[in-house]
Image 1: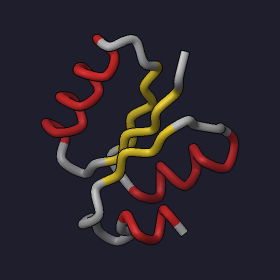
Image 2: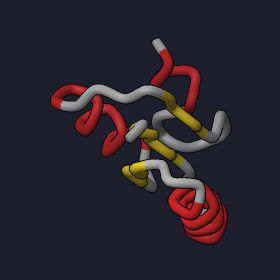
Image 3: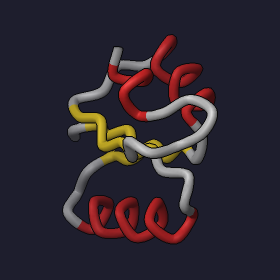
Length: 65
């Protein structure tokens, strides 16, 4: 099963994306903050990252770096 990290500071968007992707058979790991996403990335590998670009204080571009 492919594993996807979904990062968005808006709970409704995070929930919708996670629900839709789970329904398609993907394993989803959600994160509401950039800092949490970076913490998760230190110990896990993912096939795909879906990330909001506009977040504070850590934005999506910083996560991608």
